[in-house]
Image (tube, rainbow, N blue to C red; front, side, top):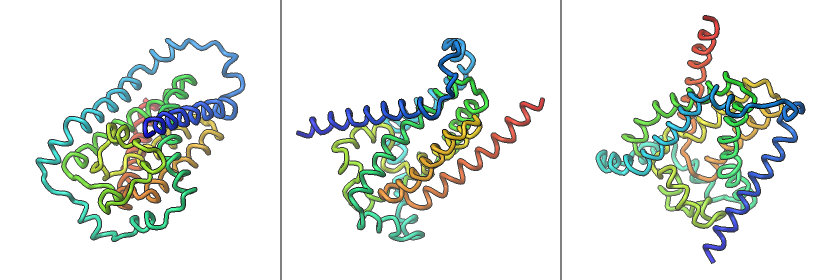
Length: 265
């Protein structure tokens, strides 16, 4: 039964992504885009260094989660979650005690499906439209965010909210057994800063550089919903979100100065 539910949700998530692709082609891709001859290999070659950076960071993250993090957590031997809880109290936990099924399903889909779609669709859109500035901002931004966040993930273990309070996972409730996959790409104590928060802000800013207003409005809406979702689903502490937002904004300010200076040379 559980296997059937997992397979069903894979199909559902696949259909959601397919629907988003069709929706994006209809509303976000310029009308004359498909009339133009596009040299895919040429575009990939032009953005190769940025693609390599993104793939490298993702690979490093998977290595950190699956191979390095368990050892550093054991080495540190202390969970700093109590310190976070002493600062902000039970604010996020309160949401888990007042979940509404419709909102839980909605925000789980935002967190799992829609956010993931923006992660892979944005760089592909930048490559196909040959928008090097947006692609460079995304790649270098991802690299800086992860390099700065990595020491916190390794040496400042902070458990997510629902695990800390022994609350049933909203993700698992909506998509049974999803955490077996989800926690192959992250850990329960890589919370501060919130990578979901940092990345969704970076993506929104990168997309805004394309000048595509419809797509920009869409990703900014998703940015807001993702940030709400990590709190409503009792995944991240408020300090995780604040630190993730400050990290992303700081990196964006650095990149704005660097990329502007580079183009002025």
